[in-house]
Length: 469
Image 1 (cartoon, rainbow, N blue to C red):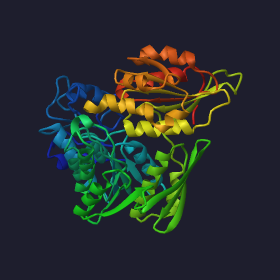
Image 2 (image 1 turned 30 degrees about the vertical axis):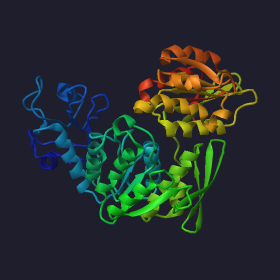
Image 3 (image 1 turned 135 degrees about the vertical axis):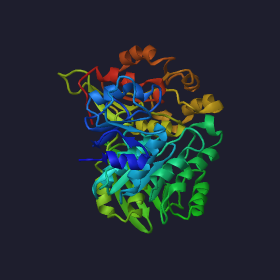
Image 4 (image 1 turned 90 degrees about the vertical axis):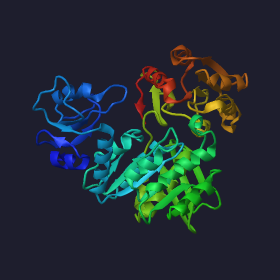
């Protein structure tokens, strides 16, 4: 199926096509490029023009470039533009403009990607759904997602992230959502924003691109909820709050967690609602409630939405669980790993530790956490790491290992009977953690991606024949 013809892409970008071609996809990476993709020669760590010849050899339909790179044939299929990034943005705007899809944009300090995947799973029950890949939520990820959107898409879910002030509003203007969801506002990227109010204002700027008559869905129990509500009013949007707060229109009234499943109970405008999440965690129930608020705003059937939501489960690095068989001959000799190694900030750490504390363990098993540094917290980073030791969930955790220079502050704040090992690097702590694990243990692995705890997850997987749950 054709996603872009040479004429369509040239009209969208103001560029010039050297030949006639049709592309079935859009790629920025030759490692994942599929035959028939339009290769976009982005300039990032490396100049994408250096890989154009390779992309064409792998079967790219054409390449979006500013010039014909050295080593590329004169008759090669190229779309020549003045600048790559503005051209990709223009392609994304055109992709958005040509579809009648109902668009949902998601941002928040915690849970963006998981919530985006919940929405993808839920909306697929109602029609053709397109969503961001992985965490493609930045200045190139959003327009790339829109450029990849088929014209016959019925629902789209666009994740929008930020690291610095002023990033979200321009991306929302490209996405033009009908519903904008803010999962929560919490300390993250404090190096750039300084105060939580600055983070809230930036998250609220997702409403800048909201379509007329659109709806804002946000967490009503954060301390900055009034700021979010005021921003929605200023944007002329309907607004819906979700959470456990009494003022939330979608109010979480109860959560039950057992056997890898969370059952949630809610009160929605004077009526009771119940739904299930195929994962353990109050935070998953909270974001699931927000997802149901989004589907209601889109006018979709509530019962079908709840049924579809129940099919979602976390992915690798974001809370996925795995049972590791330590002895293939003895099914009883297993340990459980909660892989949350992709990202971390204080709010997501608390949520993950609460999940670990609520996870049943074998009679002789232990609840163990291996926690890495939380990045981009600014001057308050040492204090925020140490504060994790005082969380109520820590009372139910038997042992805590720490990795990274900042996590040393947490390690020092832990009670002696709960304090495991501390090492500056994953490679240093890996043999100690592996040696300590025994059948019946439940292990949480969580930290910012930069600390590299995924290597510990991979090493523990190799201890047995675990299958993702």
